[in-house]
Image 1 (cartoon, rainbow over the protein chains, first blue to last red):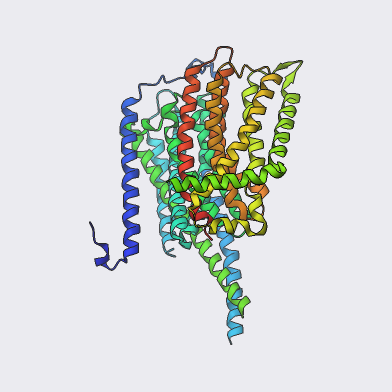
Image 2 (cartoon, one colour):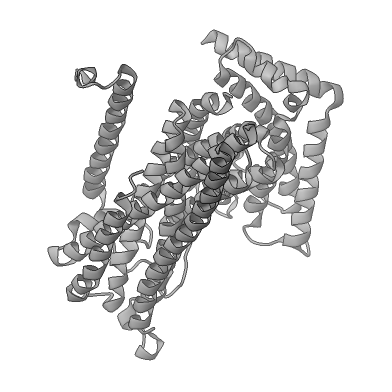
Length: 111
Length: 220
Length: 227
């Protein structure tokens, strides 16, 4: 067994690390097992399931243009990511302002 | 969390995101679906980032529940929010792809249903954190573990049922021309996820400091 | 292990004794279930003919709604006079207390389901008793899955402010898979030509979910309830 406490890690922490390692190994094993078995077990799927017509059979005027949809998808991803980042930034700004206020009050009281 | 980690991670993810469109444009057309298949690179990557965030949420929740580490609780909140954000990306890019290649915006297929349920659980988690009041942090940790328990079901949902949604197991079989831009995008999303996590954890840390300060002020 | 079930049984017996005195929970939940089915039948039965496939959905939604009502009150008695602390301070394993409470909820829901199944069979003209054992299996497995999560959340929410609102908000997303499986399995049974293989598939999926939910609930009950 790996003696982590020799490296200055406390007994309790060593126990946590060991358990985490076991969990991680288990997850990897299950993942590998799943990946191999499912790949082996999965027969070739029909490319177009029942009830759906392949796009080639649809007349051109019924086909949606792909480019705007594609552009929309990429724009959505960007807008969501930047929007979320902006909310974090705003919340952080207000908390830090409040923090500075509180710090000043603590400093004033202490003085 | 390290203050310097965020700029580094954010810069790195920007590099990934700047190069990704070039690789995606250069990738060959898929035979059947054509241009619309290129949504796949960001669609798949956003789900991967969501899986990562849920994994972090589950492990952090367990650490908080069984070890009582306040830092783990802060990480769990951040991970839950990130998971909702990336799940939203996946849930929006999915229909944009589906309307072109399946002809419908949304269908209750096993994978889409599970994805929607998982997103609902995560939103419920955030509602609980926002309105649960004191004492809800441990309850939220329990819910976080339930969210993680759903991950395996989400993964196998396309393997067990023959559904319209392609199974995840096709991904490793993709040819290199598709694989490089795909894994590049996944790397970009994962780094972005980590950047968002560090920023959100920092916010939570500042809030904790503020709470401590107010407590100290009240005691005086 | 024997002690574990002894404790659970004591919790069940305590609740049964309190319940037998005023029958509050039983009667209110039953009444709610009845009115729920009636409201659904106003919505989904036209000229004596139920909308195709609505029976299985109505059955499970009614169970989910009245189950939520019952779960919301499962720990209500413990809230007064600090009885929860007394229960948790008892020299017994916490999971045993959880199991006891869960059994109480299951017993209550069994009564509710017996009534709801009969009502749905008559009002919606659904051949629910055609494969009675399969229906019983699906109902049993689905209720265990629903109630195991519900009992845990109900206990966890005891100390939070907006209990009544948060229980359904948290409970439904987590238990939607159980409801989907229950509805799909029952639907396979009440079709003009029952598909038993499909019902078996859904029942086995329910079994799988139950194991995961119960394990997780037993595992997290202790740390969640510790102050």
